[in-house]
Length: 130
Image 1 (cartoon, rainbow, N blue to C red):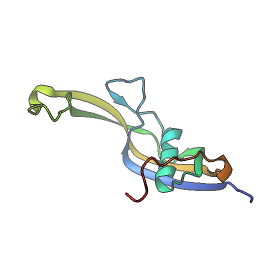
Image 2: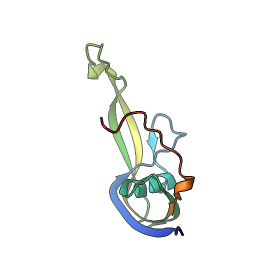
Image 3: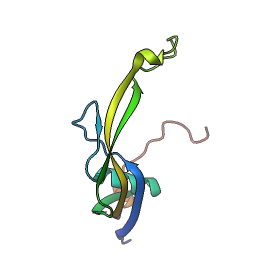
C-alpha cells in the first residue's frame, strides 16, 4: 500500500494572541509571530489521529505586527480542598503582559501518515467494557 503526504493550508486570525517566551518567567511576553509548535497544535486540534503527524512547512504573516500592553490581576495562591479558602485581596498580584493584537496568519503543513507497522503499540490498561 502506498502512503502519500497531503499538503494543507489554513488561515487563522484573532483579536489577541500570546505565544509566550519561556525566558520571561513572571511577565507574559509574546514572540513576534506564531511559533511552529503552536501552528502544529492548531492543525492537530482540527484533525487528530494516532497515525497522523503534522509538519509545519511555512508560516505567512498576513497583517502587520502590532503590540498591546495589558495589566492584569492574578491570584498568587492555589486553593486546596483542605484550606478555608483564599482572601483574594491578600493574594492578588498585578502583572504586565505584552501581547500581539489583531493577528492573521496563513499556515502551511503536511499531513504525514504513519504506516500501521511503524505505529507505537497502545496497551489499554482498562477494559473497553467500562
